[in-house]
Length: 118
Image (cartoon, rainbow, N blue to C red):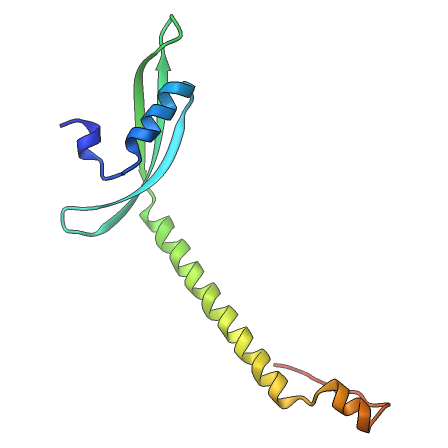
């Protein structure tokens, strides 16, 4: 079995081609599954080994499991979404409770509103 058959990354051939043509390291992230169907995120670095004639003699692939990093990123994104929603909801409540500035100015030209949110 070769690396193209073993990998679940759809772009592996493209990444190999880039590495061979540029003769420079290429990195990419791919998602795969373990035998028991658990998702795993892999960060791969392909590094070309150049021979004495300047051609690529072989490629070295180094993989790192970044599943925990990806899970943390997902948690951060979820928390960010929750916080944004909470702020939008708080703003909606604030607008509903506080009188419109134009309305207050028409009745009380010299007015002010004290707002001390918790």
